[in-house]
Amino acid sequence: MAERKIRVAVVFGGRSTEHGISCLSAGSVLAHLDRRRFEVVPVGITRAGSWVLGPDDEEQLRLKDRVEPEIVDGEALTLPADPSSRQLVSLESDTVGQALSGVDVVLPMLHGAFGEDGTIQGLLEMAGIPYAGPGVLASAAAMDKEFAKKLLAAEGLEVGTYEVLRRDETTLDEARRSRLGLPVFVKPARAGSSVGITKVTDHAELDAAIAEARRVDPKVIVESALSGREIECGVLEFPDGEVTASAPAELRVDSDSGWYDYDSKYLDDDTEFDVPAKLSDEETERLRAAAVGAFRALDCQGLARVDFFLTEEGRPVVNEVNTMPGFTPISLYPRMWAHAGVDYSSLLSILLDTAVARGTGLR
Figure 1: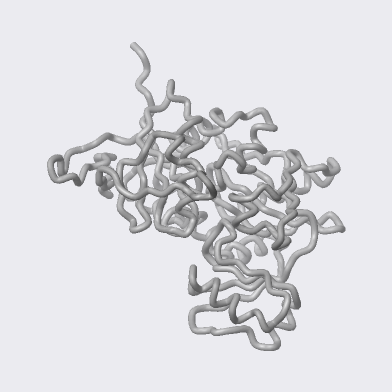
Figure 2 (figure 1 turned 90 degrees about the vertical axis):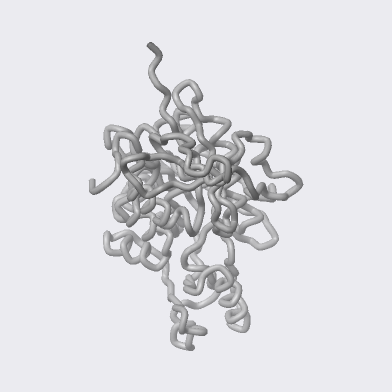
């Protein structure tokens, strides 16, 4: 008798400003999942937050003429927070309440708020469905740049100089501006993909940059610009609990903005990548150790991509930890693991097998 396939719900889209990037990642994932082992249920989340049966078609989830794909409609679904069922349930008028399918594991291919920040992880914990990637705490902490930096620094990892503006703070006073110097990067504290970020080279530009960041998040973080080589390193957990880091990769940006902004990441062809980065053996091992250290400092599981600046003195400074890195055709995370001999399909299988082995609940 043939072994039953593992039923995996790939969830994508979502309410964040990274909706389109999530769809791009999902398109690549759907194209590379091993259908001999996995039965796939594509679940799209619209920008308004409605859950629908999504397309299982890479062509519908491609970038076309610089326009990102979007989840607009489909058969309405819900996931009850009931650990005894693990069922996706239809909300369509003629089949309302009918179970669409049981789910063995979820691959939450969501980026940004309402997906990568611990929210869907909490729902899946309530529903008792294993899921790929870090849990509630790690997802929430990594998404919030302030608390990520605090936890990383507490474990002895170097982070850059920063200031935080909470909802009731309008701008930085002279003392805080002097501490940060110029240039600075003004960012939404809880967003990714470089959305809402402005590079500020003159304090006259600061308030406008804060307003731009607050279009995404009322909490803003202002970071001193870091100099050095931009290095990324992938971390992967295997089903037996082993955690290892890939060889680092380097990115070099040749864009009008002069930094790795949204267009450079996803729309333009102005960034060069070295996979692996041209580093000494000592630098490589220092970065790999720091990547695993950051993974453990935030209590991550499953996977993460750790972004560094490597200073002229060879010190790795952690910039961010991404708990669900991009899986688009040009994303560095799968490319780094491909260089290590783990192809895209095998990488997805490892993530899902690890999730099933880990289960839900306290661990």
